Image 1 (cartoon, rainbow, N blue to C red):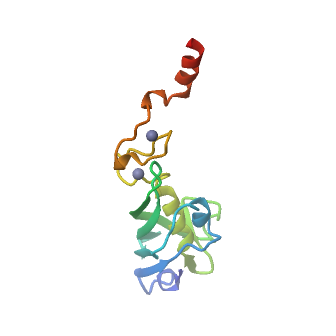
Image 2: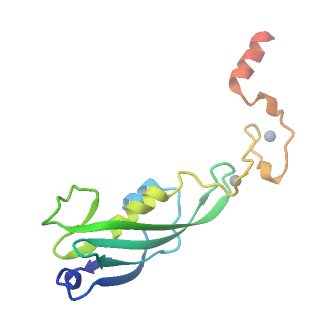
Length: 169
Ligand SMILES: [Zn+2]
Ligand SMILES: [Zn+2]
């Protein structure tokens, strides 16, 4: 989504509202880093850019629906991540493009996607659980312990203790 910033830069508008949705492209950093995450539904972005007398600001709300596998029991799990963020905007004539504090406008145009993807990467949990107290899988037989206990002896889970036990025999 590329916003034409000319109306704000020329002073004819104080604020531009936007709304768009997108699916992370396969070669995007987002899709690469979260390769085990399925962004099946479009990511929805709403917000505005505003002239704040002397500087400009971007404000956006992002809604990410995704599905992945529970980090403990590997059952499928769907989640919704809602992010709100604000960032200052500057034109490339005023600020170096390496300055991370600003979103840089090139040729009076603002590409919203890189900033949105960056915020999602910051906020995405590194692992998703099907529920807070997911019991996970038995280390021995692989049974999903949320569905009930198994007959394995859980006392031998710690491998250091297992080695000690063989030494004592
Ligand atoms: Zn789970
Ligand atoms: Zn078991």
